[in-house]
Length: 273
Ligand code: NAD
Image 1 (cartoon, rainbow, N blue to C red):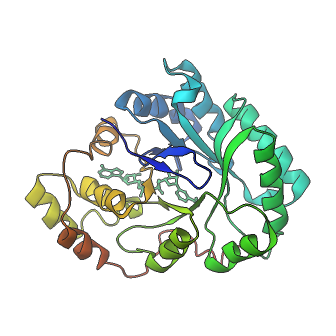
Image 2: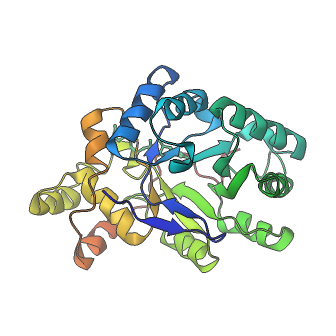
């Protein structure tokens, strides 16, 4: 299986399909990550908040793959919105992973009421200049947060990782990202399972002989977003990677997009502090 790459605004490439590790416990992370690598995934999404960076790093070290063959993202946790705190947190992330560089580092949440995400972003620019992180981006940023970075800093984030799924299609923010050269990463692409019994999705799945998860993930890919579904069940890990032998029609995509009801599974960035 060849996963397409997306070229980011700094001319680096990211695999469009990866493996998510939120709510994967530290005890199960090493085995789950090794299973994902064996299934063919070459992109792992973790975060300091998930408490499993060390185990992700151990799995990569134990795998037969070279570090350079795997794209790894981690995220700056919420307590560290300050230059010195952010730089120290990045050191701890690299240390936990056991890496000498990270592919992509994100500000996990903007938290405008807690600290100054603009100052934090300038620290992220410093990290990138040091060469120890190739690409920097943000997560859960709304338009007004991105606009402040455009106005007050020198670097446009390469990605904005936001909640996107058929019940929260985010077409306005996705279009804004695109207009500014920012790739959209869709977190909770399956709405943590909530969309999988939707009759529109199961109807398309039945017609194509695919699962509801595969149809939903294919919808994301054909819209151009980057996804990293999470599962610790090997059969589902394999299923979620088998997305490249079928296509949805424009009508299928439109029918799934029409399911939008602006329904979040996670916090609203405007209210989360
Ligand atoms: P998801 O939408 O990937 O759903 C995962 C859940 O869906 C699983 O626990 C399982 O219950 C079910 N599932 C997965 N594959 C299935 C299949 N083939 N058939 C049936 N059920 C299946 O949810 P997620 O883990 O929240 O999101 C994916 C990743 O996005 C996370 O692991 C994490 O890396 C990232 N994320 C980021 C943020 C952020 O704030 N930046 C927030 C949440 C998640």
